[in-house]
Amino acid sequence: MTTPSRGPDLTPASAVPPGGVSSACAGCGAILPEADGPTHRYLESSAACWSTYGEVLAREYGDPGLFRRVHRLTVDVYAVQHPGRPSAQAIQSVAVHLMSLCALLEGGSGAEGASKLIREGVRVKRRFVWLQPPQSMGPLTVADVGKARGPAEHERAVRDWASSAWHAWAPHHATVRQWCSDVRRA
Ligand SMILES: [Zn+2]
Image 1 (cartoon, rainbow, N blue to C red):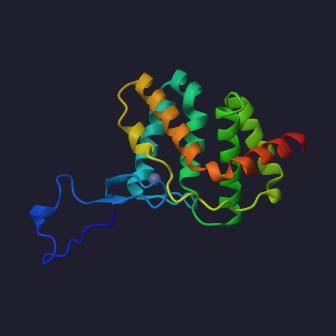
Image 2 (image 1 turned 120 degrees about the vertical axis):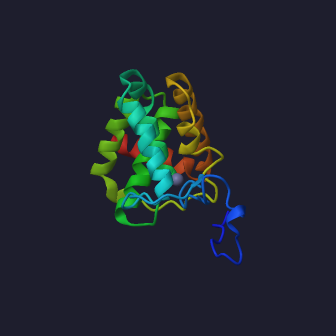
């Protein structure tokens, strides 16, 4: 979706939807009302998407049980849906967060095992290459988690979001699985 023009000749004020103008996040594609604000240095996103992520994280920090159950997933999914451009940092970020997702979703790892894999991945980062991000990051985004009411809904939303994002990266699953086993052996 393109950003509607705000030019008075093209877009009368009455045509602007309630809540203002929305636009799609360049990373995950979430359609959110445009907002001013900070974004991450290499996880490229819209300011509104980054702000929604901040709200989701705040909920997890405020609920130790929820934090334990889904925080690792939340951080990994947000990173892989916002791969940015192929800098050394972005290559490493996409690689280790995809590996963590793989361990959590396919390998039955808990958060600690996945975090250990990330630490080991960072140590041997030179072996990673840029993975061309998929055209679509899947139908679910952090905005869907943002809409959840209560911890149970939040947890379910994160799990659905994680499966959907992992599925979107399917063309690279074999590479990510290989990296996981390489890093575990290194
Ligand atoms: Zn986004």
